[in-house]
Amino acid sequence: MKFKAFLTDNGISLLEKRFLPALDKMGKICHLYLTRDHAFFLHNLLNGDGIQSIAQFRKEALFDDYRISSQNEDRIAFAVDLSLLHRALRSVVTIYAEFGADGGAAAVPPSNRLQIKLVKKLPPHSQQAMPFLTFETKGYKSAVIQDVPISKPLSRTDVLELQAALDSAQDLPQTLVQVPDMNQLQTFVDRMKHVGDPISMSISKCGDLHLQISTTLITLGAEFRKLLVIGEKAQVPAEDRNLTAQSRSERAILRGDAMSVQVSVKHFSKSLQCHLAKPDCAFYGIAPQGACLTVIFQFFIPGTHQTDKSISLHCRLPVLDPGSG
Amino acid sequence: MSSEVDAESADLECELDNVQGMVDALSSVRWKRHQDAVIELSEHGIVLVVEESSCVQAKVYLQKELFVRYEYSAQARVRFGVSLGLFVDSLNTFSRPAHSSTIEIRYPGPDMQLLLRSVDSLDACIYAEIRTRIPETISWDYNFEPAGSTPLSFTVKSAALKEAIDDLEWPGSSIQVSLQPAPPVVTFRGEGHGDLQIDFMYYANTDLLTAFHCDREESHRYKYKFLRATTSNIPSSVIKENRGSKLTIGRGGMLKVQHLVSVAKQSNSHSHADSAGYLQPSRIAYIEFFVKPEVDDDNAND
Image (cartoon, rainbow over all chains, first blue to last red; front, side, top):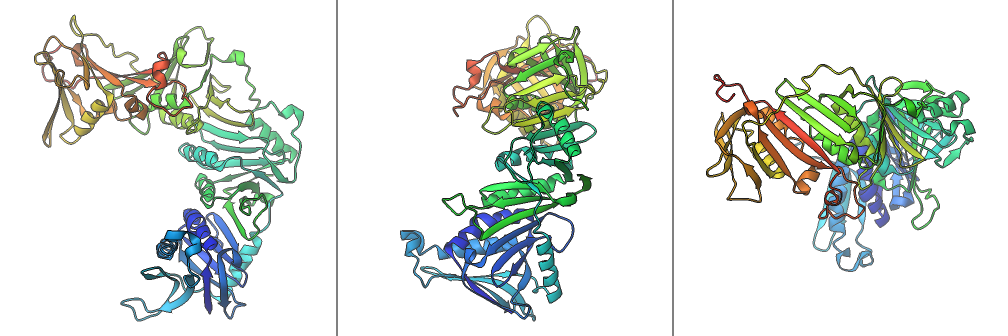
């Protein structure tokens, strides 16, 4: 089992500045799953509860000189502590950037690269070799090696299970609506958290997103209308235009134009933390039969409005109640 | 549920363009996590009252001038009970940082709820329905009366008052507040695990103590936790705007503490210096606390 690659400058900035901070909010521990063409950061795919998050990178998005081999069709997966990984990467990057400090990135000599590899080492005061993910680079005056402890690589059956979970997490909701402003929604949900739990979400084919927390003492909600819809669409019936948010979404559910699910406020708020990865848009949708609430983040190729297909990030929030629809 | 309540049936329908100001004003009387409040509506505005153990009472006055629109159609005053925490938390969800947001407040809803709704945008709407209850019979009025012919009062910078009361936390549970005319000084003294005395000298620092009226020596003790309630949640806008708080000692030693909280529309420019409060002097919420003194063995000061 071997893995060795060099992180590209773009890969470093994607991980250090954007994805690791966002993924760390999803949960401390995640699976890093490497295949011949892709690297995945996966949260909660093997254990049932909790928010699932799937970050997928084509190998070229992060690495060059990517070499992987294993007896399991060149697939390797292990668990890693994201905050440790982030700290190690930050430390390595400060040394790595020493060359660039004077003259920008162009000044980095080709010999100076940031290598990442899997190693087995004998930790201090221990008789047994342990697996590590190692970052290695040298700067102008110094060189640095950071060993991030990782779990034992997953067994063949566990990897198969992980791959199966990944495959089944790819199905898209029939209707997706684009979230207008993630920061605003985040502030709103953070304040809503004080009022109660869970939160019910309904999404309609007309482009309405309706959130509501309801307890015996209070009902607090927000409705966003006329959002961009991807997938199945419908027109708002004229007589529904001037109703309250609650009646409008109830009627849309009855017509079959909307679905509603309940999720934990904590999970919902976590899903919004993904904006730390600086996606260009975010879409919410409800999976068929109300199986889960799906959030899909879209990344553009810098300077364009074209989707960058080498990066993808989506979350699946477990549903607390089968819901309607 | 048909939620299109016709406007005529509501006792109160009003609109406010500075939610944050209202959150600030109401938060300033929130000294515990769970507090029941009584709200009184009238043609003059909204008054919210909270009370604890018949020892401390706080009132927030939101006069109708603070609202962009205020339509009151009931004949008599209307009173209802509500959880202060839920009311403040839900109001807070309407407030957006660096944006002024306008909300509509209505009472009663179809099930006697207090209804809040954002009215800024057609395509995004936040709403809340807060359950109300029949108010408990609280002693509505603490009957604050001036003691003697001249009132005993002083005005101190709110920030300094808060700091002094925060500092008095360690000595103990009972704080003595004394006023004396010559030399003019206000003293806060805590005794318990140790002694701590804080003097506000009128002549030494006129910036701190901006007004002082006292013609005789007087001194009363107050429970620390109640004194603390009067400044524990002073909004940051009060400190930023360098406002003062007025303290008056009334008959029987009852202490009245008054704060002013700005509910002016947030200006788009980010200058605090010409805080809109000066431009719109009427847009101030008045906060009043009444703290009863600790009962001494003898009723000397009656």
